[in-house]
Length: 102
Image (cartoon, rainbow, N blue to C red; front, side, top):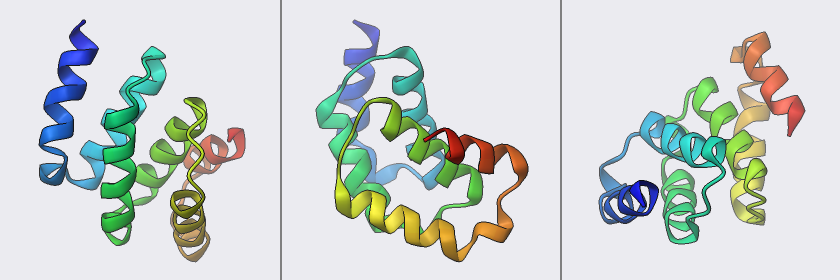
C-alpha cells in the first residue's frame, strides 16, 4: 500500500526529519488508522532526541497521535509530559484541548 511505502521510506530517513516532520508523519498515520510499528518506533526515538526543538503544536500533535495508535512507551511520554509542563504557558487553547483529549 501507499502507507507501507511511505513508512519504509520515512523510517530510512527519519534522522532528516525536523520536529514538525516527525509530528506530521505520526499524525498522518494515526489519522488514517494505519499501524506502522517500525516507523512509530523510529519516530519515538527521534522525538526523544529532538524534544528540545519541539514547539507547542509539535508536542500536541505527537502526543495525540501516539495516544491514538495506542503506543505505550513510558520514556517517551514522560519526556513529552515534562517538556509540555515546562512550556505549558506557550500552548494555545487548541493545543491544550488536543492534549486534554489524550
